[in-house]
Length: 74
Picture 1 (cartoon, rainbow, N blue to C red):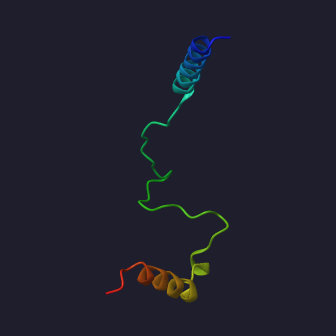
Picture 2: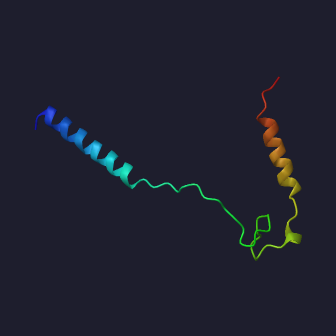
Picture 3: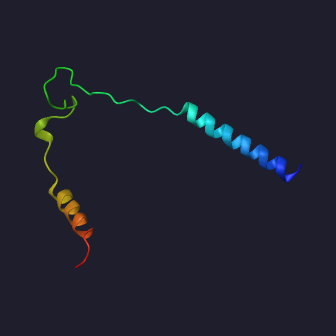
């Protein structure tokens, strides 16, 4: 097989794969998310309770330390 024929076949197959990928690519369109009742807040899952939500102070301190480490030393 000549080099020109091999290049041509490779080019045609690459274009076919790219065309097929473009055809099957599907992105979701923009949608408006609304609550079922329209209460104006995000509904909590049934298993979560409002009293169970307590901040983890060690995690907050760790995140603060990481954010301080990203600043340039001056």
